[in-house]
Image (cartoon, chains in turn orange, blue, brown, cyan):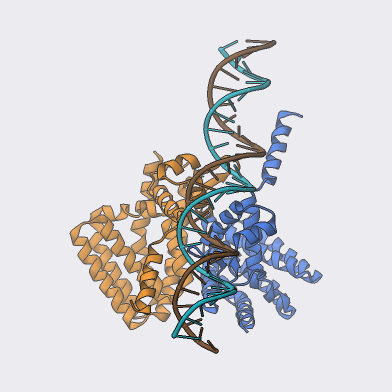
Length: 230
Length: 230
DNA sequence: TGTGTGAATACTGTATACAATTTTGACTTG
DNA sequence: CAAGTCAAAATTGTATACAGTATTCACACA
């Protein structure tokens, strides 16, 4: 093997390696976001450790990360429980999210390159194709990919990071708005309008369309929160 | 002791109690933000544990939280090092920060109560008084308190949380813009203008003043980043 | 002098052990 | 039967032990 290849090989293996704490972190995180672990439920270290076949150490370290992310609530000498999400809390998340999407649009208007516009168009075509296949998860991912491209076009990596973090907090509801299929086709044309506005550097138009675009999703999330509460 | 008093006493002691991991977390966090631990510097568990007089466990758990916060960079099987902040990175932070301040203004314009306006005015008077005393840290805190009130007036707790997190990432530079004293008096009048705009629900005016208000601070941060790089 | 090799060392990753605190539940007592 | 009490069990918080991997440095050899 040549040096370059060896290096590449090692790097690949490095990427495969994940400390147990991160495996546990991802597992618990998904379980919370998907609602498998219910708000208020206690996370007991030994129980989790046994269930996952590891010792308490990686479990504890994973909980520390969940703690900082706000997904679990720590009570001293009592341990962690799944943080409960109030309706108000989710409204706040939606509001911040729209603000950040607007900021992304504003910056993208200034900075987007012709290549990136082409990419956006391609992503929307891909979104349209996925729609016709009906796989809800694939649709959601294609939609997310489209939006992700706008964030990137803002040229602000920190913004990408913050916005992804915020969106993850509504993960548990993300599939719902895609499920009621009647409005789906409209999403495609809204995407087109957004791309058009970006192309013309027309910020106000872009914001207006984006607001409408997000509104449905917000409505669905709101409905679902109330449904869960019952 | 009466029951109520006992309860209160215990609660107080509860508040005093902080797990070692949190003590370590706060200590390391401050050290990184203040620049005592330099970017790129390795954080070795045994060394830190000895220095702080604890075992590796709380140190490791603290590092997990620093990792999620992005303050340290984890390299598998090599450990943690202090994340380095590039100029680009800090520019991004400043940009997101201004976007969030604007969002806060927008929401505050809609929701601020007369009481909160009074509070803002009081905070600015307090800021002015602190200015004359010349204690840099006290001045910075008074200024931060003023801005914090605006965030709160947005009525969006998530926004408060996100904006504080973003601002913490420029902590290391936060004192600098206060230090060159010549522009200080202007800050007071800018604060007044912002309060006035909020009172009149004049969002555009508020944003305009806020932009100017933040500009100096941004310039100073930029200068300082470049100074550090040399 | 430069370079490869391997043992020694240092460090992280994980598991386990021990200490301190909280919770539980049975038992007592009014 | 309710309320209080205390010991046992469960659970978290912290320390230590052990295993595996990376790093370093001395030494051999070209």
